[in-house]
Amino acid sequence: MSLEHLAGNAEIENSNSSPVDFSLLNPVTPTLRVSVEQMMGAVEGVRRYVISHLARIGRSCDVDDVMQDIRMAVWDGVARGNYRQIPGVPFEAWVQGVTGNVCAAHVRRELGHKTLPLLLDPCNGESPDILQQLTVLVVSRDYREAEEIIDQEWAHMILGLTRAAVSAPVWRLAVGSLTEPRRYAPPSPQDRRRWNAVTAVRQTAKTISQALDVDPEAVHDMPSLCLHAVACLPSPLLRGVAEAIVLPEHHGVQRQVAIVAVAEEFKVTDRYVAVQIGTARRLYQTAWRVIRSSMTSAV
Image (tube, rainbow, N blue to C red; front, side):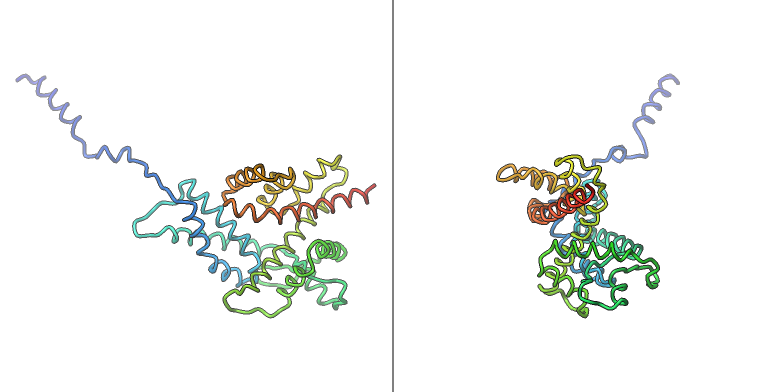
């Protein structure tokens, strides 16, 4: 056998043998499937943790907003492949980690800027000290007293418009949630009604504040007025519901089609979107009236 033949055989053997398992060079990408029901169930399972976490800073009324942020974060995490299944570790444990991060971010935001409770009745003859404490609340990390004072007339106008825009029972529940002593116990149905009332008042106040910032000269006609009113709503989901369902006044089949489209866009269930329609309509009408009134005053 010639040397050239031996050398050729050696090259063939070297090319066929390799210390690397070729199956590892192109691993099969696992197809991870987490059902919507499993995701929503896991998110609902952390609600008590969220309530407890927010209660530490007196923001239990934000539970619905934070739960929505968690739903979005979990959905995006699964869709983008950030969730990796580990043997023996349930999906709910990963959701718990996401929840901790979302809650921590929300707490940092709340402790980093000033907030206006918007639960003051300026017509009841409160003392100036109480007026200042309730009208302006600056929350900082070291819990120092307020260093900035919001214009009292502006605050009173916001409060008056907000109170006029919500029902009397909702206003009373919201005020009660601020003035009554805190109870450290599992939430009761009455607590949930209070939180819902506070959420309604806060959303209304934010909407009115945005509507007052609209320049009347930028509103040229009725369609422009409607679009500006939609833009005043306090969250992307509510704006989406108002734009896709409330503004076109869809009913029947068209309404159901719009609900499905909004649910897919914001990664929530159809039922959740349907529940938000009433809130979006109420806030849209409030913003519309405020902007319209500003236009009339500017003439």
